Image (cartoon, rainbow, N blue to C red; front, top):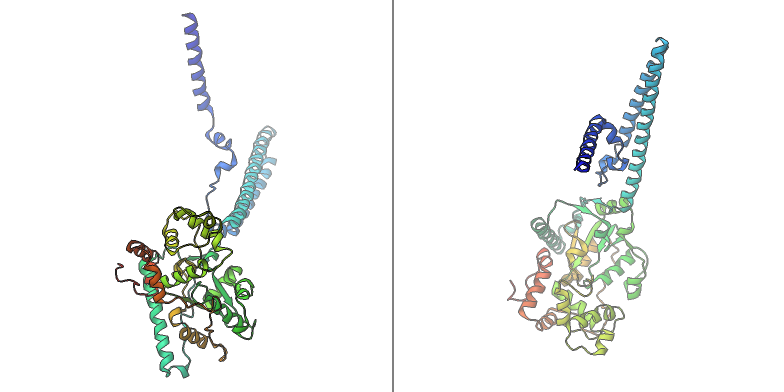
Length: 428
């Protein structure tokens, strides 16, 4: 019983002592005992806060000057005091100087930490470029062309295409975050001599457009002299994302920006025929093997080994699968994602279906040499018939109505933005 009472007394005495100790402690001292890192908000800061460092330095300079003047005044007053008071005030002043040095040390540490954080943010954060304001809109017709009914008609077609594209963007796309990153311009090729930006859309005449850009740039005298591998693997053309922020921004705002598109289903069938119906050292092992393994029942060992012989229905199953066994590819991706037409204000929108007329009209607008016309030859599988509307319908006839509808839904924004009609009557 006695031990229990002693133990209770000791606990009570300890608790009382702790309460007294907390009341006697200065709250400011408790705050200063925390580690310096806790004082700083490590979240991302707005760029404006990084740009006012000069004002902060002016404030610190004024503050330091004022403090120095006060200290000087205090030291003069100490000389006129009695000796017993001088010793007390000297101790106080030494304490004040120590506190000031500590505060300055903490301030310097905070500046260093801020600079380290700023370097880290600059290194790690994505590069952001303001939305281009498209000074050009559409190259104007020359005075001698305004009476030409053909040029006037093509000009009005361009105005209508741009109107549909802008209305679709304003209706279905949010404009709250109008920021262009290098990713958005990674498919855009640059021709500096005639100030042209071309967004590459595969299976919509991109090989021949690259040939034209190379001729405009003086890299070749004729489009016929440029081989397919030279066009795609020669790295003769510059991409817009290869420039710095200033270079990208300047070109977006002053160069003529153009893209050429194609009916989405027709473009898809063209890509399938090119990549899966002919020998291919990349698409068969990378895409073909994954597609056959996932979607073909009782696949042969040979098919699984080579990835050859993918059927169009299997290809569509892969395309519509949310959990694709292999990622997307530019040859069947949306134009909306490849060229970002709701972020980049393209000045000229051409169509594959009227390629020769649209392309030569564009070359006329930019003042290209008169002997340069858009090439019409087919440089790959030249003996094979081009993918037409009739061929496209034959391929899509292999699908169920549900698969056709889902495929249309997949490319719905491209159909809407570029004013293509529904390819099948049963689609809604």
